[in-house]
Image: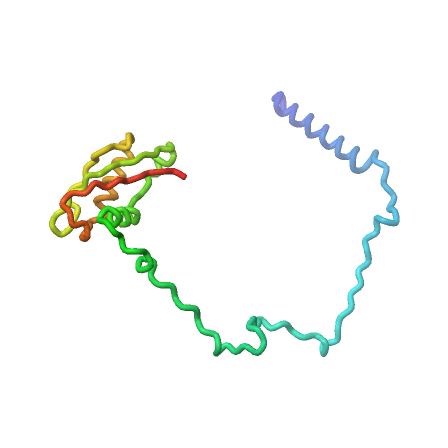
Amino acid sequence: MNNPASRRFLLALAASLVLHLALFGLGLPRKKAGPHDTPASISARLLPPATVRPEPLLKDTLAEGESAKSLQAPPRPADTKSRRPAPRTPEEAAQRKLSEVLFYPPEAVARGLEGEVRLLLALDGGGAIRDAQVAASSGHKILDDAAIKAALAMGSLPDAGARELILPVVFRLR
């Protein structure tokens, strides 16, 4: 126990014990209980079993007089794709299909990168996308690459009616 760290620890422990004993047991005058320091009394009365009506687990929330038979299920909404107006141009069809597969790279989001890429799509006779090249860069390679991947993921544009198509791809943070 000749270690200075051990001596300091024992001294601190002894000082702490003396302080706690002084505060809690020896030197503090005790406060006398006043009229407002007593706990409030609570009175309760049990009702006889005949007057207690158990609450049903399931409640009928229909208005009185309205039967469940008269209610009909609301019509199911039509498929979201069928509610959209048909695209008027091949570019609109391509934009709609692109919006389903476009992925904003997380690294670009973290860096706050925005831009517009113009892609040149080469299509075969059936509308399948054979090639996608950057016609006008966004200024950020990561956005250009994401646009090309999305264009190739579209697979085909059967209603394009063209062999080549310029497709703008916009990356904007809101």
